[in-house]
Length: 112
Length: 113
Image 1: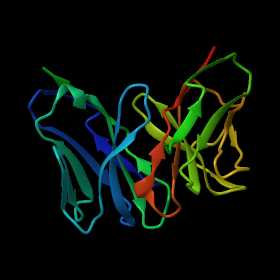
Image 2: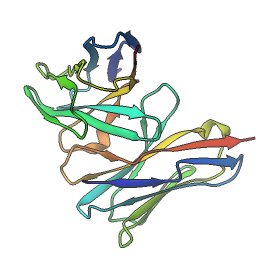
Image 3: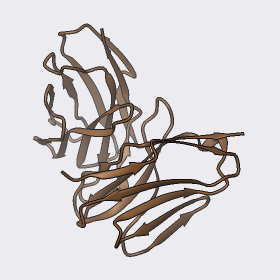
Image 4: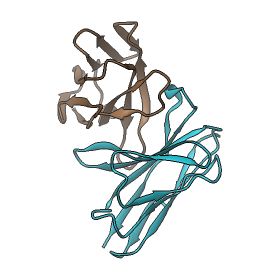
């Protein structure tokens, strides 16, 4: 079974702080690693994604760090804001494969 | 505007009844997917289809059925055989071989009473 393990399950961060969510995978054939953001009652939306040929990708306040040898990747949200409060999912898929395998999600709450 | 439309947003059914959830996309995507979301369990794949008239079981297909007669449409039927059907159901689509275009609908919340 292809799995992506995500932690923590929930996270509370103060406004302006850094939120960090971690994921680990087993299948070395995975070559695409996106993060999705989901607000209550809505479908997930793509936030940022990375391929294993780079170790880091940054888009605004969101950064993915990727460690190929450890088979781990993480999402960092800098200067966290209350509007970032949502559920975040990591995912992975193989080259040419359409299916995304998702982590179990992290519920982030950013407090004032 | 291109996107995925799921309907209805909320659905209530009595136990033992079959119910069909609608998913339509106008993104010209070849592949479509159905996921089930339960608290603490993430997104679990029910069925997926990569081309018209073809579909495969995902990780939790028991008690569900699908059809793919048109590229734009991928309805999901929750049958009476599904033991615990109350959940949030999400439909997604993507271009074949390109997961960067993986797009979700806004979901249907099914409650069985």
